[in-house]
Amino acid sequence: MEEKLREYAKLLIEVGLNVQKGQAVVIRCPVECAYFARLCAAAAYNVGCREVVMRWSDDFLERERFLRADDSVFDVFPAWQAEMLNGYADEGAAFLNISARDPEALLGVDPDRLTRASRSETAIQPYVSAVMSNACPWCVASVPIPSWAKKVFPGLPEQEAMDKLWDAIFTSVRISGKGDAVARWHEHVALLKSRIAKLNDLHFTSLYYQNSLGTSLNIKLPETHVWAGGDNTSRTGFPFVANMPTEEVFTAPLRDGIDGVVYAALPLVHNGNIIENFHFVIKDGKIVEAHAEKGEDILKAAIAEDEGASYFGEVALVPYDSPISNQKILFYNTLFDENAACHLAFGEAYPECVKGGEAMSKEELKAAGLNDSNTHVDFMVGTADLSIIGTTKDGREIPVFVNGNFAL
Image (cartoon, rainbow, N blue to C red; front, side, top):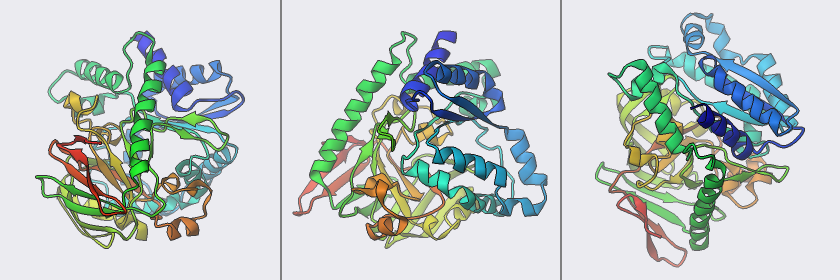
């Protein structure tokens, strides 16, 4: 286990972030996972980073704050945190987010407080913009905590649930204990790049989604859209992998070009709550109806965070036959669940999804057809019977997905 943990930390630092000598590394991590954060810090120093800065989080304290803090605090983002994040982003630091939390940590919290807290994050727009445009290397990864493990594997003793979740995570990030994870990731990125090349060569004008859940959705794509995935390149020219695991290739939809209905294939964990059995009705790109059997108030608050939150920013393709999906585990963690199924995201679009986008202003990105928002929320739509038909400029209809998997 110790060898796997060190291999995982090495993978995140050397492939996920690709930390360079003299670069600062900022790590956000739950206090329960301090042991792993220390391994990541050591791995960062091993490759010559300048310093490691820790940002600790805690489910208990976050819940207490949302339930009991003075109401005024949710309208203001702490100035010291904004200065720290914006400052390190400006200097090109690498950001590692160890994502591990109780999926229902904020159950029962007033949705208005959650929405206002999210809106206050405009104070860190320079940091968010740097991450969204890949100016800084960043990586999101996970390690188990007991509350999360028990949700994924209910009924098991705590340690057994933790062990099973560790095994699932190691499988998802291609760690076998043989010390070959870095090489296996380079092979995986090459596979994703080959899929991207095929999609970019076809240059679809639209995609049509259909499955037995009731999804019937037509998605127009921007004229200059490009597909991305696998790894990204920072402004200093070094590749990094933003999500570990990742099985997706993605682009941006045309902001006003989505029509139809889409049903979620899996529950969504958002703002410490679980949203289940939900669907959207979309017209001219905008969500005009949102319904959920559980967590509808949280869902409606999420799409009302700002004007762009009710439009879409990402279209991602993930084969149903993949290392994560094949485990048949509902992770209750978007990092994993979004890589088990095709997904969409409402909110901000990634600038890299149009030609030259990473150098464009917000106005130029909007003119290219991309959505602008302070939020970006992925939700899963892929199923074993999902069909996706792509239409080319000359009117050809080409199967992109058949029975949940790539057909190209």
